Length: 236
Image (cartoon, rainbow, N blue to C red; front, side):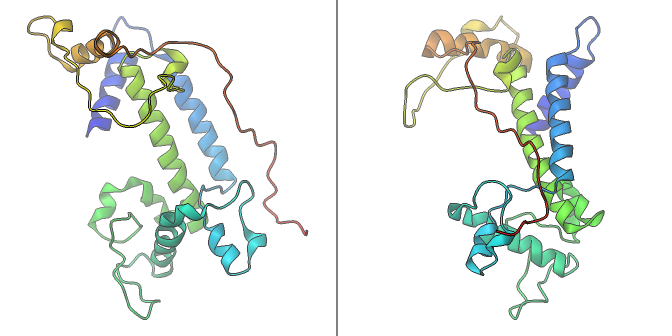
């Protein structure tokens, strides 16, 4: 719900409101991420650690083309990915007919099944339109794109400027969890309590009451650059 509200408000307020300049930075970020997603899917990439299973069954040569599988991601390679495989093998039916136990595939994890829940899971629609490997890559690209664009929209709506909305670093030196509170009332004009009013009051409240502030600065940032990818495994 909140993502939909933020998206709608940003499109109406920043991109379409008369007399305001388009938010070209946000549009540029969206375009760059969309291009990255297209390249990601065209290469058939996923962040899956299913290579851990391939190592266990002695098929390590079919493992990841970049990085190493993470055992700690067993929620993905031991549960989620096998559920996706079972759903595809069973023609997206709710019961796993390929298993002796005929278990129900309706779980807390979203997998492509032919039932009413599919209406609320657009990231899974593509499984019914293309092959499973491509659909699996699009599924992850959708989640990554939605996460990055969602946080960009959030920080831009809160008033963060430029690259601050894309890369934020914690330099408070604090560790652990804290129960904190702040009061927006002193920063709101009487009778003005709309979403925009509260968003504008948030940053001065954090700065003056808690001593926290977003500061724009330049610093080196690590980037991963893939020069080329060979999808055909080569001999050792």
